[in-house]
Image (cartoon, rainbow, N blue to C red):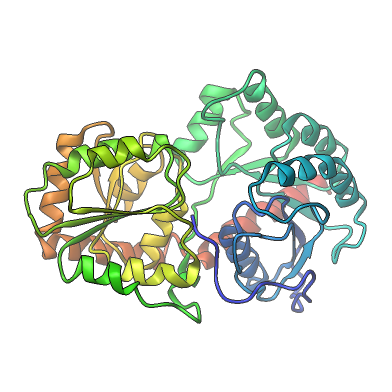
Length: 399
């Protein structure tokens, strides 16, 4: 998605005193999801747990300050610091076995012997599964990506070994639970549904920047739809641009913002003069102005379980137009916080775009539902309570 806010964390910060809660390590070796990791750690600490985030330096920008928990940047401390480079990837792969073994020993960590370890991402599946089986504490893995989208030979089998090696797998939707059980044969008792939380820290970060003047002039006070996030084939941008042709309002605008992970030339060929691309990494201080200005957030994905972009939109109380895929459907059907259309149907998507951009009252109803969902089911206090309940269950079962 984007980086995150204000100040970069120290390599180790002191955790606040806790009230007899479990001692927990949250582990994200590659710092793939700092917004999620840090929101979860802060919520767990506020609920009484003693928490350490074990991760690596995030090279794309600043991250949220640690609030009440320790941070140990114990992974990938050597080698090139150019994010995404082949040299950086090679250095990470070379260090990964040593860093995982050091994690297992507790070397240099704030909580060397936790009551439970909660992993967010593990990408060297064959090796990591063997390490997990040697750990003595209860283990939880959050399945941010349920299954490989374009699996290499043996990758699905390796992912299954990871799920077999932990005591519980957190998924963010009932759809995710079903996929693990039905498609991968995971023990039905292992997947636990705990929703993704709203990324509400973005609504209050310091140093937020105004909208770029040129972009602000282009948008004016016209109806504006926003697609935000990494640009990848499965996100249905070609469907969105074909759908945009169905929007008859000559004043309507579509902004596509995010780092490309696919060729842009075919997409630009589909775009008309009302479409603007911002094909770059958008920093967190820039992000609030984008979401504040948007009248509608549109995510036309062909497949997904859940998306941090959606939970950013909910945090800003934005009207959302989503395809009926994965956990998106649950947000629309259970919370009424999004309009849903079928994936791969540009005509239906275009009709919904035109209707919502032209109907402030319809958008207002979706905005109210988004705010209500963000303050209740998707609040971090609710998610921390469910997560701690799972932790205690696993710790007691192991004892």
